[in-house]
Image 1: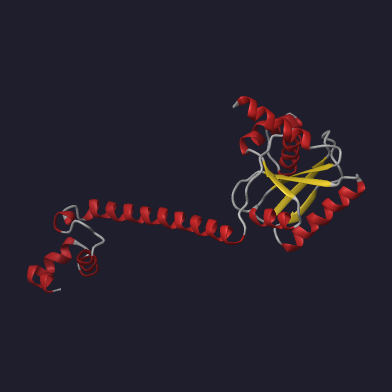
Image 2 (image 1 turned 30 degrees about the vertical axis):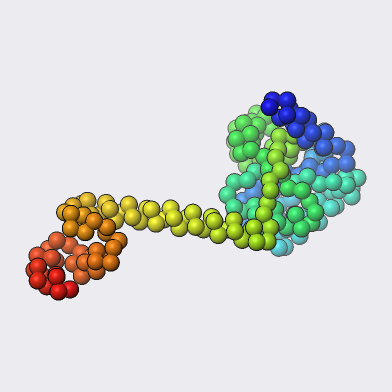
Length: 221
């Protein structure tokens, strides 16, 4: 197992060669920062600050092409730290451009950033360079980004998980309210979300309401 991992690591390192432009990007909600290095770690050009929209992505593409032409780079490896969901539009855009997107481990970024300037402080400008260095050293992985129907399924699955989590939280709150204000409720109606229970809660939400109505009126309702 260790041999296979070592062999894969070596393949990733040897893939970064003289013709490779390595780009690392720090991802934000609205603004991203990208920096580029060559296979030896020498930074090429200035950083590119671009917005997370069509205009910004076009700016990034033009910046990478200019750097590639200026330094005789025929291949681009673009790396990010996959935190949150803000990188999805960027990754989809780059895939359409034929540019490979790789990801680095967030914990590796946190551990490595101090080597950049002997300081553990965080900044978009610094993190972009750290990400590029990790890629150059083969410390990256290649994500399998779904497309078309599979991308839609991923979105639906994420939404379903959020809805399920919210439903569980709501049920927990309702159970908490019963425990505080009406602990005897479950002796009469076992399932609080049943038809009879929901009718009861709408008409007589508190014990005092039941007492005021009386048994006959409650039964009639």
